[in-house]
Length: 412
Image 1 (cartoon, helix red, strand yellow):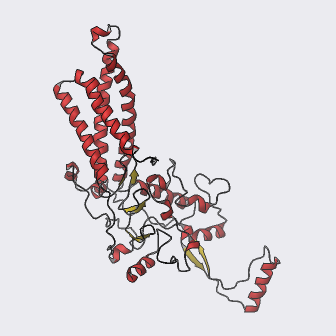
Image 2 (image 1 turned 180 degrees about the vertical axis):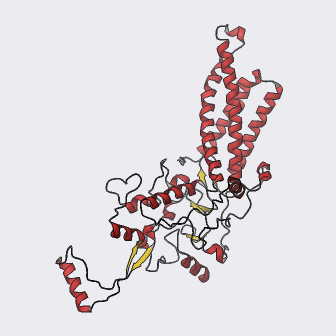
Image 3 (image 1 turned 135 degrees about the vertical axis):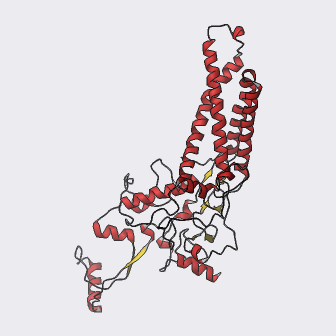
């Protein structure tokens, strides 16, 4: 679970203190008295790599769309949406970060411990930092465990005979559980990141996939909703698509290939619609009944309805052009009342429960926990005109239909 910090400076201060305390503090208080020169040299190399990769993960930007001159080609325009915060076209897999105040290409999440977004350009730097940190913590932890075994074996000898100082003993007993806790946290994050890379997905997209699958199971989205289009099937192909060629992974300054806007997709992908699919309560449809009635009957029925005389009776088969949503059609046709894999809170409607700014994944993550501006992800039918085009020069939705994006391009 990714949570954002109230005081952003702690995101840099806490990791720096941990690296300095465990790395250099462990070197000075414990290791320099117990390791050989060669082992101590390797330990210091690992500490340097952690500092170096951490600095790059903090300083390297995640990448943003080229603005204000970004004009997608016809194929890319079909997959683009519009960001109301930036008032500009947003490429696929791009999200608006509420902390960095900009759109981020292939946004994975906003990491509070680097005070930086993780996206297309700096994902490889982030993976290098996690790998070097887990490697360094693993070797340091086993070294501390070996030292604890030595202390246990010499527990019956006098302190002076065993050459163990109280400072070294205290440092060992404190650093061992701290190292294990930090190692466990980073190892889980590294495994989750590599797992997502093997599926060619991001943390945000894994959240979206779980949400879409839940809506399909609950009947809010049709069964033929398109699959995730960027999973190429092979973990090797997905890793190359996410991180670039294999040999470039070991170049400390290399970045993934591509511009962060064009991505290889599976053959079954729908090239005319962006992913994830629009929510059912965002997708307008029209209901038509074909047999029009004379105006007198229609007016009579309207008066009966307002007076309450026709309560509970079906309407006459008059022509109606009624804008509704796919979710409305499901609820009216089969009596579905919403719900979810875990039912919404008492008094909450299904629409509220499944909104992008409200829904939680199985481990409790909300969209805003990844740093995404949740307001920019919510589509409101009430704020749009009849043809779904927002009023004025700004857009009330981050996910705007392709026709509106094209009209925006033409008008600009």
